[in-house]
Length: 259
Ligand SMILES: [Fe+2]
Ligand SMILES: [Fe+2]
Image 1: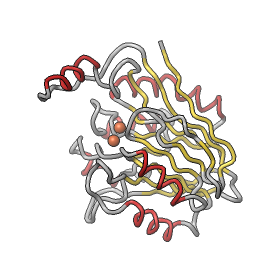
Image 2: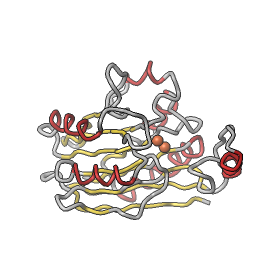
Image 3: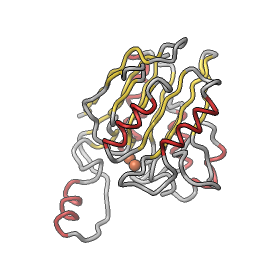
C-alpha cells in the first residue's frame, strides 16, 4: 500500500498548491491513498466546509486536523457529515467529530488516527492512553494503521513513535510546519518522522508574513496575522506499507519549492 502524506496546508496559497500539484505527485508515486493535515487551510486557521469539499474533490482521501480544528466555528455543525474528516481523538466527550476513521482501498482496510500532543499544547486527554484505547478497538479490523500525531514537542512525538512501534504502520508528526530530517523505520517496523512540514508560503514564518511576525516578536504586542506571499512549497512524506504484515518497508520525505 502506497501512501502520500501532506503537511499542514496553510491558507489559500496552500489550497492552490494542492489543486496544482497533487495529481502529479499522486501519479509520480503511484499512491493508493492521500492524507492531508488541513487545520490551517482556511485563512490560516481552521477549515470551512467549502474548503473541505474542495480537498476531497482535488484528490485528498482523508483530512486530519489539530489544535486549530475549532477555529472556523461552523465545523461543529458539519464535521459529523464527513466520514473521512477527523480531529484529534483526545478531546473530552461529548465532542463533535471523531478521532479515527477506517478507509477502504482495493479491499484493504486502513485505520487513520489523529491525536494531539499535550506538551505546550491544549490540555487534552493523555495521548498515550488514547492510542491504547483506539488500537484496542481497531487493531483486529485493520492491518494498516496510520497515526497523525499533532504535537509541538519533539520529545513527545519521538516518545509516541517508540510507544506505538510495532502496533501501527506509521507515526508522523504535524503542527510545527518545519520538516524534520529524522525519517526512519523503527525497530519493530513502524515508519516515523517527527514532523512532515507544511504546504503554503515558503518565504514566511510558518506560513505567516515574516515582517508581521518580526514586529510581533519585537514589540510583544498583538498583531493581525496575514498569510505570506511569494514562493510556495509543498512538504510531505511517501511511505510503502506491507499489506500482509502492516509494517513500513519504505519511507521518503520531500520538500518541493514552487517558484
Ligand atoms: Fe498547523
Ligand atoms: Fe497545529
